[in-house]
Image (cartoon, rainbow, N blue to C red; front, side, top):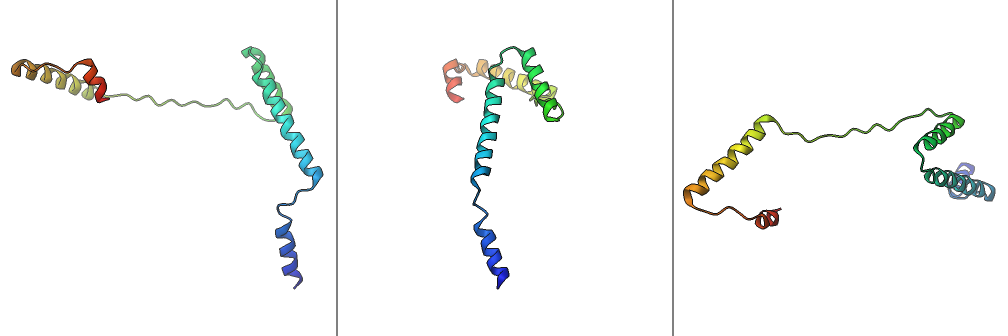
Length: 111
């Protein structure tokens, strides 16, 4: 029976936080926000870099530069040639049939 009571007590105490602990968490979060605001206020890149390096050194964390990988959308030679071929065939067909090409407004409306 005691095991069931202990389990029930532990389940009830999961969400209870003591006042000193809650105050500590609020103080820590406020301090973090103050630090972020201070860093955001620095406009000089050299000073900002020194501030971040100093902060990380004090915290004992390594400097991890963000890795930015940009994927460029490229098309191959065959796709370019196919587009040119298609455009030239359209021009040839318009000349043969006498149709007028679409206006820029019509092309924009298609998008």
